Image (cartoon, rainbow, N blue to C red):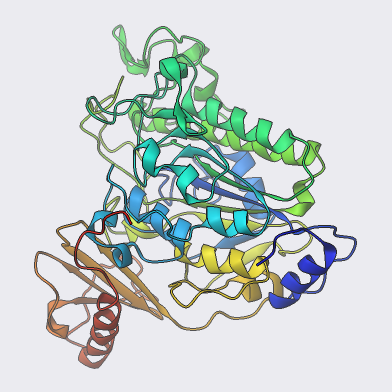
Length: 481
């Protein structure tokens, strides 16, 4: 393992990834992993011209955009996949849906421990949601410092989780923050902390895991009117109160104001706010002279929420059909494409050529990719693959399986190999090939037509692949060790 920076390390790491060696480099690159929350495929400008996200779009265009980029169907499972390079079912049913319970034992290798053991400074900033107690927080998994919420969604201005055992969630470096830092939007607090971290002087590379709460509900874009939550104007129910005076509802091209639906407009405002925050992080890298030495990976954690009943978190509005439309079937928690096919890209100026990677990739690939960047071989237990040869050398990715299950009482199942994908909904393990729907994503990316009866041999092949993956999963809940 790498424990001290040096030019020989980076040259070996880059050569391992199939790229040309980089000269005049004194240490391995910094890495920033950006994970947004509930940002659907259509909720980003480079997929949808109705969305104002110029800073994210520019960042994406500076690198390799993933045409077919996958997450897991919900927040906690995706975070497990990102952090460990393993499908969440490998840890047991507790890792298969959003939860406040510990999802993997203390001592589990994570991106935090990977970089910490390589000598990098490690910081988790934003949402953890892989064990919502200090005893199972980021400090136990390789992060020297951490800041944000231990639990999932929080009130955007008071930073509390749902009422109950896990209500107090806002923490810094292993201790809860008195008063929850009430009064400042969570997006701003997280971006401010990330900028301060980037601007610190250091003599070693860093790993920043930057997990924004946006654009998860509750959506609250009250701007400078911090003493009252976002609410519709009683005199004009098609407008938000003081909307004309809140910066996040306005962009130079007027895209946000052109949206007639106030709830969709509120989401567009939240994206504008998120975009500006990410822009400030990139500016900090630029202004500190570190951008060219920093790899950035970007993804949403799952597909769009679409509908939300409200009243789960502080200042939590009921919202209906508030995301931008997508050309896929399903949404958050679905294993159809709409729940798992999300925005994603990688940027490293001077090393990753701008363009599109057409082959399917998955957030489970990030651990082995970053391990290779550190000169390490992917561990045998990793489910993902090293994307480096494709990102840095233009190589084709090998054919492999992508695999999804969801819910502790598992009732949603899917596997993709090549352009073929099988899907099953319902209780009970899929026991035979006939239990599945089969889709040809090359001709039917919206999964409208089950072609299993026309291709029984293909369906049987994918079922056998599913059985092999399912055999690797842990069936019982896993406690700490």
